[in-house]
Length: 289
Ligand code: FES
Image 1: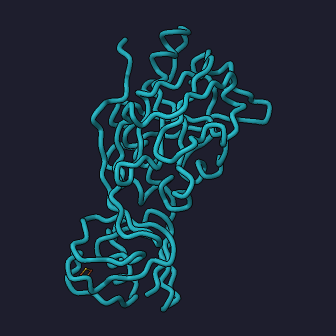
Image 2: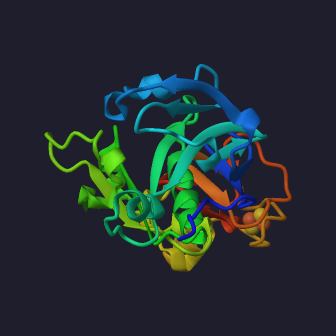
Image 3: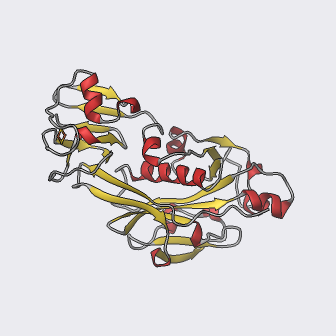
């Protein structure tokens, strides 16, 4: 059986707006050798404190290596802003290791997500959701039907994004040996997602769009495509003209949250300003309009 390996060359591009930035160019791509940072020797991966896996500088990937937890740098993908790494995720094929090394039958097309990491300073800004959406679509593109992970922290966050507890039998024996189940189920899993990560962002969990001046809070509906269309359908009045990111008439201040651009804005925007006519939410958003 051939081993399913992450493809090289898979790349996604986003333009992202947040309350603190002018539009950011974000790229999801395979890690390069120069992205790698320290190699941490960790004999028991379950005992790793989150801080132990954090690199000392933003912009490089921590790769942990130890018995039973050999992180292959080739498994990593990164999110970059201006070619600076701000988040990482590893995608480790499990299927062939399960069938090939133990003789047991594993679920077909299963990969383990590991080392999901967002650099300090980039957290609470939607990059975790962006990273997860990219990883799930990347997994599908690489032929994995489902992904599993062993969350060291933030299990609730993964539950909110569609992960449910799974039996450990999907893990190869050498990996399973390091898992401590004494505190209950520890493995979470969900299906991968074919398609584009941008489409998935809207479906990962419920999102709210709040307009401060009218006091309206709307549930995001992916069928509306953009925040301006959502507002228009709900009777929230926003100034607008071109509806295509050109004239700048709809520019609005983002009080909190992150959006992604469906098409590049062609007018100038100040820090924290976005164009509702060409954006959709990545997280809950609050707009000062
Ligand atoms: S309506 Fe013209 S940029 Fe949004």
